[in-house]
Amino acid sequence: MLKIENLSVNINNKQILNNFNLVINNGEVHVIMGPNGVGKSTLSRVIMGDSNYIVTDGSILFDGDNLLPLSVDERAKRGIFLAMQNPVEIDGVSNQDFLRTAMSSIENKQIGLYDFILSCEKGANDLSMNKELIHRSLNTGFSGGEKKKNEVLQIKLLKPKFIILDELDSGLDVDSLRICAENIWKYKEGNKDTSILIITHHPKILEYIKPDFVHILENGKIVKTGDYNLALDIEKNGYNAVTKEDKNE
Ligand SMILES: Nc1ncnc2c1ncn2[C@@H]1O[C@H](COP(=O)(O)OP(=O)(O)O)[C@@H](O)[C@H]1O
Ligand SMILES: [Mg+2]
Image (cartoon, rainbow, N blue to C red):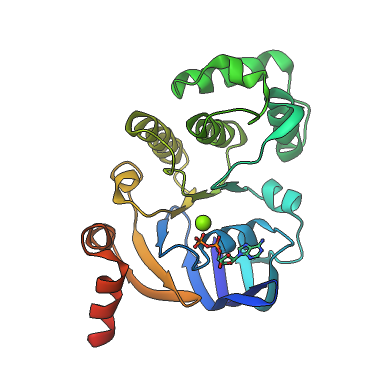
């Protein structure tokens, strides 16, 4: 589904990713872990098409097509979804209008109001989310947890086939984390080909969304790959110990 080859990315003339490689096949769940500031969010934004990040070398293929010339909207239409680390607040745009516009753009048809409201309410219900949030301005004044639940509501409605979760678990209480992660796993189980890229510091979310591969990002590239146990090892011993042991081998 996603093939990243020799990707190098700059922001403000500072190189963040350096010859980065990653292949994610249909239905796989990959995890990227790594110390603060190594470029995890940068990777997610480059895949989504944020023009602030300059690709200086390499390629990103999605279902065999070159992603780099496509706009954020075009990438969303292809089924790529980024749940941002800090979802943006847009005052004056109602959450409901935003969701309905995004749905009609992605499905390329008008979305009937009645069915739309029903699916929003069902989604909010599944997420134990206050229904009032659907009618408020997008993310404006939402608590950290409410913003993250709203991102998961978007996943349920927009039905992406490649989902990036950038620290979905940051700022979520244990119950909200479980609810969000269970909803995403359930969505994935109903859509077997959907692939997920999880960026996280903690193995807890991986108890619900079960990973096939766990990677450590450092110095602009993946320096170590393992399975769920690598995430447990990092939690217990820290990044330094885990990557040092690797370098001594
Ligand atoms: N818009 C930006 N302007 C300047 N520097 C940035 C910007 N975005 C990211 N960076 C820098 O790029 C590096 C990687 O950031 P980021 O990808 O957010 O790291 P991570 O998500 O791994 O913590 C950091 O040093 C950060 O300060
Ligand atoms: Mg980040």
